[in-house]
Structure formats: structure tokens, C-alpha cells
Amino acid sequence: MTDLTLRYDWTLDEVQSLYDLPFMELLYRAHTVHKSVFDPNEIQFSSLMSIKTGGCPEDCGYCPQSAHHGTDLEKERLVEIEKVMEQAVAAKDRGATRFCMGAAWKNPNSRDFPMVLEMIRSVKQIGMECCVTLGSLDEDQTRALKDAGLDYYNHNLDTSREHYEKIITTRKFQDRLDTLEKVRDAGINVCCGGILGLGEGESDRSALLMELANMGEHPGSVPINLLVRVKGTPLENADKIDPFIFVRTVAVARIMMPNSYVRLSAGRESMDEATQALCFFAGANSVFFGEKLLTTPNVQSANDMDLLSRLDLKPQAPQAQTQDVARDEPVSGQADRAVGAE
Ligand code: SAM
Ligand code: DTB
Ligand code: SF4
Image (cartoon, rainbow, N blue to C red; front, side, top):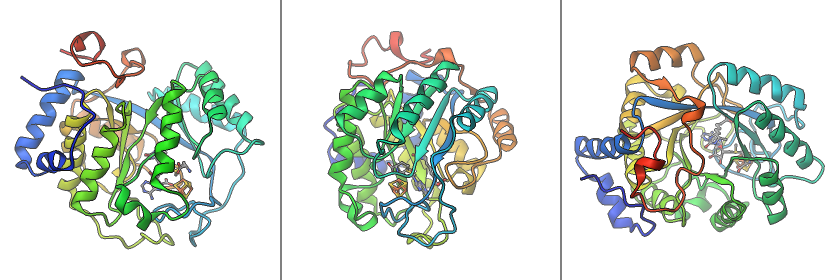
């Protein structure tokens, strides 16, 4: 029988042993978990928009939006709400069920924050799920976001605790965990994942997944990004990782966090279709759909539709999605809660 017990006490050795399984065995196990919780032929579509671009005071080594790096990015102010709604409606028409907005902030400022709350309320009004990523938050801000109707807050751990300070020096790994706790306490679903290809080692990847799964409640969404190497960032020449390591990471995440949506996030544009198909088999069941991520290109929508059709994958209908998919209850009685269980 497939073990679907939700665990929060993974050790590094256990995670490493999953990574070290023979590739086919790992994929078989991950797919078995995936199939017992989700419909493996359904993919959730999220759409992404940058609402405040560039000029960020943080020095994240991967990010084109950091003011510390010499990228060619044009710095912009907070966009108008009309523009947001134009894009949200267009995303909904293309089949996206969640609209995600990102801001290049260390934390939201008091001038712009009320406008972001208004954007959230408006996105909710057209019947979409809403996610934002705005940097660190205090309790008043998490409460206000919850009151505005926010469904998910994205705040990534990015890499292991050990590797973190080689990538970012303007904040600590613990700061991220603190914000995540406030988000959870406010009753907002957590979207939290990482990036592969930051020059990390094997044990850093295991440690990242261990941190994500041991947080106290599994994140409802786990985005796994492949570094988009942007000219002018310190990581522009980072070594490419073996695509099968990426697939293994998706599979291990699926086994460790059976009820979470695992999102194949940034980096699909540089990934071949067969690798993406393996990721879907290994348990990835969400993607960013639309031609742009925040500042870099995503896969062309027509190519995505074509791939999905060749793989017999269909977009998940809005009503099929549950809130709080990874909330804390044990998985017994899972058929009641799981999405598309067979
Ligand atoms: N400033 C906020 C923050 O960092 O929390 C929100 C926006 S930030 C751009 C959101 C996430 O995008 C980061 O946490 C990181 O995981 C991801 N990201 C940024 N640049 C990336 C890149 N070049 N490749 C892959 N993922 C990237
Ligand atoms: C996440 O994990 N990936 C998205 C979203 N959360 C906000 C961001 C990807 C950004 C890729 C680089 C860019 O387009 O600027
Ligand atoms: Fe700023 Fe976020 Fe980019 Fe870091 S990842 S530089 S915090 S926008």
C-alpha cells in the first residue's frame, strides 16, 4: 500500500535515500503517491504578473530585479489596477485559475500596500484564486491580506540553510521562516519552494526539501524553479544541472508532500518537452501559463497547449480545486479531501 502519512520529521538521510533510489523506482513510487491523491491527467494553471518591477534592495544572486546587479531591466513603479485586471481577465479566459502577482520589494511599503489589497479584492471578484509575493510581512500586513481575500502567499526558501548565505546576504534564512509562520497563522495558504541550479550540492537539495516538509504544515503549493540565468546577475554563468536531478527533485517532493500542488515553475522555457513530461509523471501538477514570468519569458502558450494535448493532460477546472489541500489532518479519509482521487 502507498504510504500517504503526512510527516513533518524527515531526516536528511531519509531524504537522501529517496534521491538515491534507482531512477525508475523513484518515479514509480512518486507517481503512485501522485495518482492516489490527484488526477494525474490534470494540471493546474497559474498566471504570473509583475506589479512592481526592479530596483529591489535585496541582493539575491539569481534575481534580475535586484538593484545590486547590473541587469538591463527597466525599473517601474507599482502598476495601475486597470492593467492588473486586464491581465487577470485575459489569464482567466485562457484557462488560468490562479492569478499571482509579484513585487520586487524587501517588504511592502505603506503607500503601495493598500493598492495591492485593492488588486487582491478585484482579482477575487472575477472568481480567480489569488496569490501574491511581496517580500517579508508583519502581522498587521498578513491580517490585512487575509481580510482582502488572499488565498496564497508565495515566499520561497530557495535553497538550503547552509547554501543560503552564498546566494543572499541581505536577509537570513530564518527571516523567511518567520514570515511563513505569520502567513500560516493568519490562515493564508503557503506557497513555498526553491530554485535548482544555484551551484548547490546534493545535500543542499535534500535539505531544502526537508525544510519545506518539516515546516509544521506542508505548503499548499511547492514551486520548483530551475534557475533562469540572466545576464548581469552573479549566477549568469552558473553550471546547468542534469535534467534528471530536476526530475528526481520533483519526485522526492511529491513523495514527501503528497497533498501539495508541486509547481513546475520558472525554467520550463529552457527545458525540453520530454523532461517536462517526466516531471508531470513524477508528480508536478501545476505550471505558470502565459508568455511571461515576472521579467523573463515563459513557454509560448500555443506550445504549452500543444504539449498538454500530446500528453493527454487537461487544465484543472476551477471547481475541482480545494483550499487548504495540505492542511494538517492525517491522510486517512483522504478520498473526501483529495483532489480527483480515484
Ligand atoms: N521580492 C519577493 C521575494 O523575493 O520574496 C517576491 C518576488 S521574487 C522575484 C519571487 C521568487 O522568484 C524568488 O523567491 C525566487 O525563488 C524566484 N526567482 C527570482 N529570480 C529567479 C530566476 N532567475 N530563476 C528562477 N527563479 C527566480
Ligand atoms: C516562484 O517560485 N517562481 C515565480 C513566482 N514564484 C513568483 C517567479 C519566477 C521568476 C523568474 C524570473 C523572472 O521572470 O524575473
Ligand atoms: Fe528582490 Fe525578490 Fe528579486 Fe530577491 S528575489 S532581489 S527579494 S525581487
